[in-house]
Image (cartoon, rainbow, N blue to C red; front, top):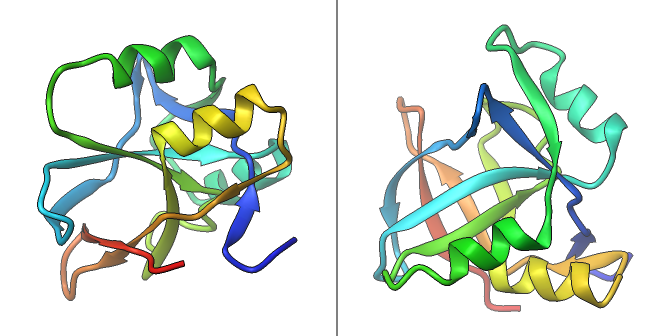
Amino acid sequence: MVVGFEKTPHYVLKHGALVHQPSIAICEVGAEAKAIFGFSDKPEYDRFLVDSTEGLTPYPLVRIFLQDQLAQADKTLRLVILDPIAFDASEWKAATFETVLESIQSRSESVKATHRLVRQDSSESYRVEALGL
């Protein structure tokens, strides 16, 4: 795998009917940001869910979902966290919905990480930073 690239996600985490999202406190790229957890395959989300008691389930990440989200007229930065290892990680790599959608449509095995989410001290919230790759 090339540096700066991660496996293309094919699953998201859902809590009931809703997509599970971490709390984002600050977005240094000057926009509101939302993120979802994305996984490339079953072993990756199994590892992530090992300590979970929330009843989260994997759900296929489909083009229609990404397209519908991107069609919204707001200025929200939408990110997919790429194969996170744990709920309490100090940092996660992420890619924009656009980048992930392009990767899925082209059937690429990898996607370029465009952002990182950094855990705020003594908080469960994350700060979003653009990666200069």
